[in-house]
Image (cartoon, rainbow, N blue to C red):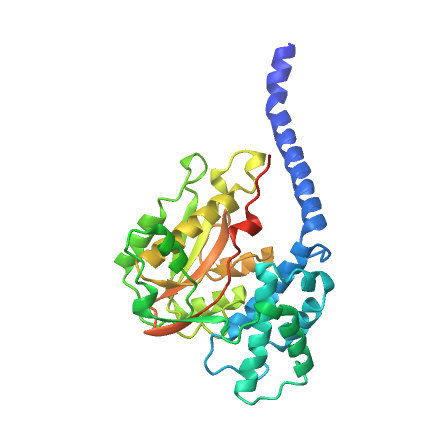
Length: 335
């Protein structure tokens, strides 16, 4: 009789146990995000550095325009003044990301001086001299804040069988000709990207190609980070990862891990086939996911990982500096 009752109650026990475990884990995730994310805290040097990168990278993107506007990104300039005057940031100028934050800010002022534009209302000469002084020997009047490439030069290391050079040569490109890429070429890209590893080889990633210009513009408007570059975007990839492939509470975030691994492989594959691309961050909220689903037919079970505008590069173009850390900053050895 006991065994019979157990067999009857067993499905209900697992149903309740799994839901309770999921709630406990969500609660734990929530606590860690509340305690450590930049959303709620700006006390630690890493949080301040993240805030700095977020703001200075907006200036880098603005510097890509040859016909830049006077006083562009004034809101970011205001934020950067506050961040760069923080004592712990000033003392951390030896950190690569802090240093380049000051360098980008100095270059912003110099670009306006070269055009004889007065921006004293948002950025004074005294502030500029102050930042130069903090940089000290790190300051260089040859710092540009952007890279300039010819298409031939940019892809010169793609097929040389040297992965180190290949990896360093990949950069986000935003300047496209507007020409459509051949579907067969894109299929080759996906075949190569599909070599990405995944948990238990479940291969839960999917890639959607959007070619309707109105839909592309609407989708990138929701994404919000590609403003000023959308005119020549004729094709857009959307990478997703399907929740249906995960079967334990511990795997609740595995879709982001597998999706991230696939994304990097996809970016390398695009670069290998000499297709310009720029991963457009999808750190969005549920309302944004729903807005996308109202435009294109993606199953609700699939989580958007990234949007990637793709295209044929112009004969010459610029990319952001996007300085990378050295291994000394993020490689830790535990004894």
